[in-house]
Amino acid sequence: MKNLTTWVIDPMHSEVLFKIKHLVISTVTGSFRKFEGQAITNGAGFDNAKVHFEIDVKSIDTNQPQRDEHLQAGDFFSADAYPKIVFDSTSFVKKSGSDYKMTGDLTLKGVTKPVELNVEYGGSENNGHGVVKHGFEITGTINRMEFGMTWNKLTDTGGLGLGEDIKLIANIQVAELVEAVAH
Image (tube, rainbow, N blue to C red; front, side, top):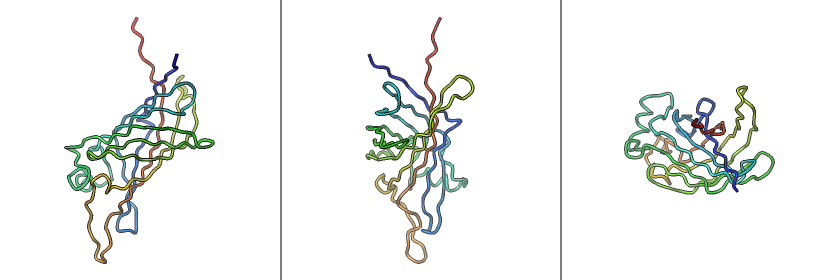
């Protein structure tokens, strides 16, 4: 008999960030405010966890409403046509100590590509209300061009205004999903 456990993301204690080079001289940081996901594990630990994660594209926040509108438009995310970014893991393997490697399929703007992410397990703690939480930091880099986000602008010196690589950083807390029992 399998001992499957479903862990759901605690959005109040989680964040999804991205960073991209602007004018090659500085970095712009943004976040997504709405996301959800879960991990299904078999037995103790998170080895071979099956992870599903969805981001609401229209929740993008770079602290500049005009830029956020541009990012949601056709030059970038095409949020009306592709409202979700979806990740489904194909592998979650412990490398050493608290370090894992997670691979999976990322679907962004209608394009699905395999990606590899680094996962650092931060440990577990009882939240003081009888719920055990687990923490993870997930990092990786994707090339936006591979997902059809090819818009760019040249600088006065002929350089690219935006970098192609996007750094991803997610700090995630999960808690066990406990089904309500009907009496």
